[in-house]
Figure 1 (cartoon, rainbow, N blue to C red):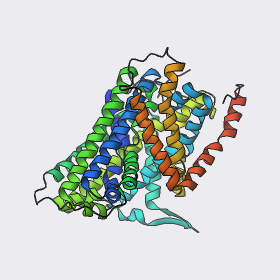
Figure 2: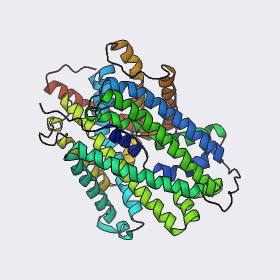
Figure 3: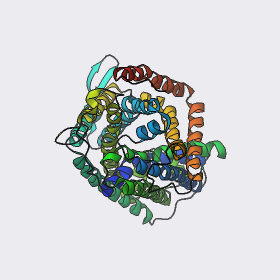
Figure 4: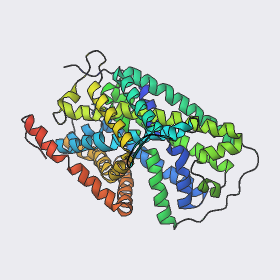
Length: 447
């Protein structure tokens, strides 16, 4: 059987963590956060707390990834800890909604920023009744398929692209940060703005921050293609997450160095407003380019990592057999990459990806929590696993992440009860396929 090749070094692993986490959130989330808490100091407190929770998750996942460096990330941890049904549910969710919806969202955000330079992207190319397809959507589909092909021809190529665009992205963000910190026309008046009660406001802002930090776990999905995974995976997970925390805090320092809390709260594209103030129209254009490259890196990283999840399930007989194939020359899960890219492109065309993605917020984080909790299960169930790295601060650190996940779950359930229940229903629709694939492969339908 042809196997995947370990062609990704530490630099590529770090680029996957940093490049996948930092998308468009760094440019847009501060508005929602300051409107929720009302002042700059509280915004920084939210970033610190959200970063601490994310780092707690990374510290925990580092043990799981280094002990079980197989393709699929959470699919491997859930299957090993709880059984194949839980791994299948995760792969089903990632393939049809969560990861594919994220890819569609990123590609659409890319064309929306590109429209700053190419206004024609906002024009309708084709209309049939309520269905309207913009030129930008066609461009977004083409970009997804192109990156799918790039990753099809070798993980080394996909990894090199990830390193390159992540380096450029971090460089441009550094330019934005420096421009803000060197701004010398006087500090803005930091008068607090009206905000909800501190408890509910802080929680709302924390939820936004956790979404901005989301994606650090993706590197585990390509664990079977990381060189020296028992060493490099913990380094990438922990080092990459720490780097993202530092970048986010520095970026927000720059924003509030130039803009008042009220101005941050009044502008959706806070980074563009800050750069326009500090550097004029040129600065706003730099932010648009930085956002495009940032999103591009997240998009490539999502295709590179997300395609390994259905591949891993297919290898265990829990998905279409063709998706378990490894290309004999390129040593990539080629069919899985193409199917993931093709489905994500269709979601862009449908315009319904945001609705689908909102349906799995609740269920996806439930699976993340179960994956984190598996560190407790596996220490009892599989004490024989080679654990060169053990979670620092165990058991407090995993419990800290679980507390954050519980907070996000409760908030989502309260604020989006219909979408949360619909997401659970969407996942349950996969159960007949689970039992079908178990029977077809003459395996007992373990639950």
